[in-house]
Length: 388
Image 1 (cartoon, rainbow, N blue to C red):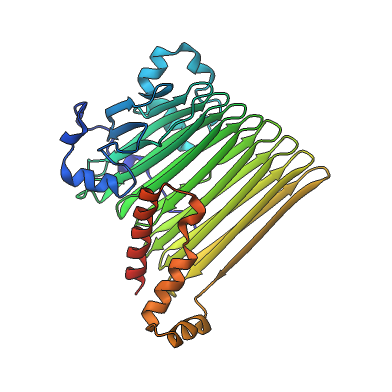
Image 2: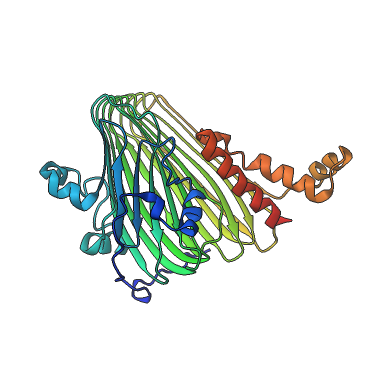
């Protein structure tokens, strides 16, 4: 189950610049379709702001609500000298070869910020889009929720319909201040031969909350990610939810880690993983370092094909007393009795299996807006059809 190697030298680093699009209606219909499948709607209906980057070019960045900032990170670093106090402070620039490369030559990315006390009425949407075949896209994102604010962000990562191969390195640093909330939903919809290496970390202060949803249902070459939330303030909370589907040839190494370093902090990691021929590694690590912390880790895996494999790696690490930490993990196939029971209710064997998979991949745990929930449910349905 070793990770597929991403050889940086195998990918192009340069490409043509794409023009800025003040009017998003000028984006091509075929690109709009790819974006909407990841929850990014260029009509901006029900959105508080939009960021779109094609390859290395930021083609749109705008806020639609007062008190919210949506900018190209390169522009933000020039505008705000104080951002240097956040830049590479959550994620270590020398963590691995990908962060080292990002430090040397990252190409834009987004800056999203909610001013103190501002609550986003609608989600902010961002799209990181590969338009050139075999390009290495390398971005650095910075997100700040100031004290008492609330942010809801939908990030869709995808490729043009004709792109088959490429790579993406994404550094994301989240800062959740006192009594602030960030709800972050990332949908990966890459092409079959794309390799992806996100590196993310969230710092959560007193009374703050970080809620991360991750969805990957389409074929991809390989993804390796292990986002971490560090709860540095008393009463802080972090939750990670993942819904994964590995097609034949896909390798998904997806993990989440929460470090509970202050009293009365809470954490939850939940993963649902289905393989129909691909490889899935689900990792979860909860580290309790203070009294009165509560944390739970849960991973459930379903194998639909004899060629598929799932490895669940749950870790609990506790220091001190008065900790409540638990985990559960289960991997298996669809029980014959379940299919037979549903067949007695009038379903065919194929219909029964589809019902079971749909129930297993229940996206209600994500708490998504209704229109995005429907899009994810449609993707789940397409996965069921492939399994049959």
